[in-house]
Image 1: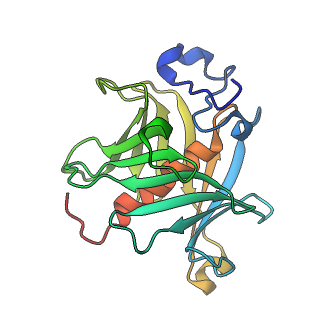
Image 2: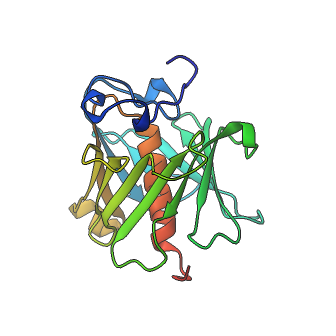
Length: 215
């Protein structure tokens, strides 16, 4: 697993998920226990971007920086120290609104990790398909996201199985209401790359909050 080796759910049966790391970005982001994170939009303490990820104690774990003057929609996921982990880029002229994710600040094909797209053009509920870099045929997704973005109650599954790798849920606090912040939490299951899960939630937010609303 060294060096951020990609392991997709297609590599092993679902019953092994609990025992084997699902390290899409880096094994350092896999914990042997469930990881609870809070995603906070309009976080006032962030100098760059309005999207932050904290642990249960309120410490910044990740933050998202936007590329305001690029030709394509681009975002960069940073760790707490400001180091780039992955870059998100929306694919131009993609009918299903596809986002591509690369290692670090690269958008080079050799650093391509995975892509995310809507599973169908017309959707009343959220359903996104995730394809890892090695899955070039895209006959079957490696992960999928289903649920209601409006209710912040989406679930991330391994492939087309019922195996859950992460669940998000809405959080209402007096502070969030007072500051006008939109808080939601995510529980990442043991041995699942939580940076990968956060990356999926950033894309989920981008797709659902897109002002055009059209595909």
